Amino acid sequence: MRRLRMGMIGGGPGAFIGPVHRIAAELDREIELVAGVFSSDAGRSRAAGEAYRIDPDRAYPSLDAMLAAETARGDGIDFVSVVSPNHNHLPSARAALAAGIAVMTDKPLTATLAEAHELSGLVAAAGLPFGVTYTYSGYPLVREARARVAAGALGSVRKVVVEYPQGWLAGAAEGKQAEWRVDPARAGLGGCIGDIGVHAFQLAEFITGLRVERLFADLGAVVPGRLLDDDCTVLLRFDNGARGVLLASQIEVGELNGLRIRVYGDQGGLVWKQEVPNSLTLHTLDGRTEVVHAGGPQLGFDAASRTRTPTGHPEGYLEAFANLYRDFAALLRGEAAPLLPGIADGLRGMAFIATAVEASRAEAGWVSLSV
Ligand SMILES: NC(=O)c1ccc[n+]([C@@H]2O[C@H](COP(=O)([O-])OP(=O)(O)OC[C@H]3O[C@@H](n4cnc5c(N)ncnc54)[C@H](O)[C@@H]3O)[C@@H](O)[C@H]2O)c1
Image 1 (cartoon, rainbow, N blue to C red):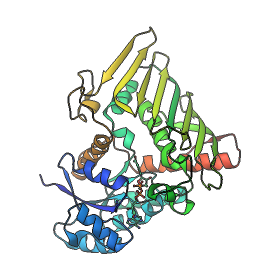
Image 2 (tube, helix red, strand yellow; image 1 turned 120 degrees about the vertical axis):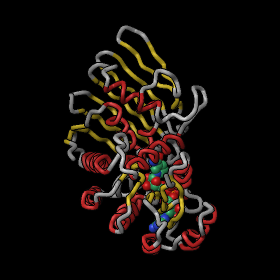
Image 3 (cartoon, rainbow, N blue to C red; image 1 turned 180 degrees about the vertical axis):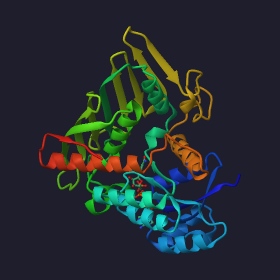
Image 4 (tube, rainbow, N blue to C red; image 1 turned 90 degrees about the horizontal axis):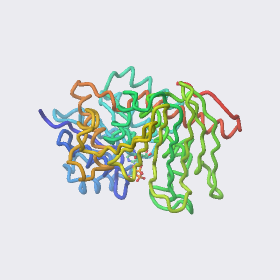
């Protein structure tokens, strides 16, 4: 079985997530980075190609050049991975799909909801594999949590509390990662809500298997002069009547990447924390507590099949991404990958962002979330 060939869009010198995707995609030796347009600047794209040690002829100056050259080769790319800022997701995916190339894209799906609807139509028309790297759904113990909830371990879900605190944008937004995230032209309609709030939203729906039907959003641009939200409080109401709270903030000084989710049903509860990702805590109504460890014998198939090291040998962020790439490789080979987020999840995330931003701006109180 040959390795699948990946072309990257974004991930140039100094980028955050491109190198993570490169490592993760290649971890299981199913995928190989062979080409890319790593920057909108041709020289920087070439420099990145050297750093990634790909054939220099395949570090392209533009997306059009990459797609033209790669589709003309016998050994051209099988898919693109879109890891550029949000405003570049739709143009990249649109061009790749038009060239008959499958797409894996980072979140949020696009910069606006209208763009997300357009992309959804393009994916349906193209009929090509399409994945979205909502990272946290790649963690084995998140998959275990989902399986336990589906098997009834908590009974009927009544309450979800999901928090995503960060502090790195509490001051002036300086540096490569920060500056586009506070610019509506490149980040899109959401700031913090689109950058990390959407992860929390997807995680809540992924683990519970429920859908948010209504929300009440209070988003603030707390840092003076900031044009996009940086602090978010959202009340959630799920389709089974369960209540929820979603907190996402990038101005909580001292917080690193403190994503945490708690889910409570009428028979038990669970807790998972991103900064301690290799254990999942489950509580029962009669007062017992079970701690499930990555690599341990209690894991079900969804988690065990996505764990690479024995208990006590920590895996984390890179491996979670690698699990999403393993799923995507399965899709490309024509197999099923039911846990890989796809276009519908991407579109739903954008609907969440747009609804929360608009409802908060209008001080509209409770509003419906549809899509
Ligand atoms: N899933 C996650 O956990 C996660 C984490 C971080 C970022 N992200 C997402 O990944 C994307 C990139 O974020 P980042 O933090 O890596 O940003 P970054 O600023 O560190 O890197 C972006 C890269 O894209 C390149 N780029 C910009 N325009 C381009 C174009 N037209 N063509 C080719 N390359 C171009 C830039 O030169 C840069 O190298 C964003 O959509 C972000 O939301 C996801």
